[in-house]
Image (cartoon, rainbow, N blue to C red):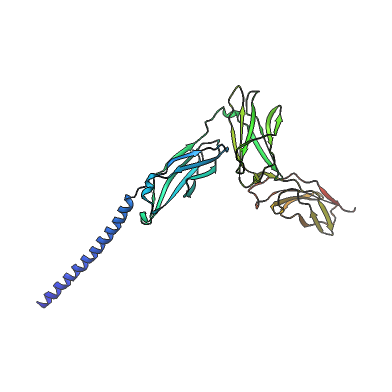
Length: 346
């Protein structure tokens, strides 16, 4: 009897232990399910009145929206917006997360623009997780006018010596004789877009623009539109975005000097005159020793080289320069300087 009694107690203890484990599992599942159910019930609407506005800045657009009315129910939560936008033919979206109700950026108006935005909700009311709304979408494009062939061709802009901006173009193909073009430009320091006042003429037509002095236009987008007019046909406008520091063409170096001491050759040249900082230059040197020529680059305005032969009778060099990678993403080489030579004794 006592043996049977002990076995019975062990079974009862096993069942009790199993019941406690099941109870824990039930409580955990219930709590987890309650959390999931709580988050699943939270729904937030996308922003309303989402639109893309064109203020007339030739490609610099405003994307703006208003908060959803449903946010009144989530005052304890943090509200942010995830904004995605691109030109329509671009593969990649730009993504911005902001608490603001407006965002501004530049676009290529030769193409359409598309954007989408949704609300992000997180904080106490979502138990620390993030709740997203559905997307609200908007598009913008300029209605095309005129045939594509009527646009200007071969637009070329150069910012000479970081001081003077010139742009030139060719007329559209097959345009009527009365067609002429006009250039407008804008960057962030201007209140509104301005028209060119000093056109370059060719056969009586505007084929370029000499810009006036520009106040701090570098390191920001510079927007240009060239449109046209004709009594006989519609002319398709063209839009461009430049960073002026990337199209700088400096003046060439001058006052070159060459001195020779036995096998050592010292080459020197002056810094180009103008506003470009000394640290922003890279130089390319073409050096000729008799019939042999080689080219090298340096960030200094002086270099030492060694003669290949004491019998060399003529040493010559010339230099050109451009803005280096520390001051711009790109640049245009200057013209070559005048040649400077040294002639040995025969």
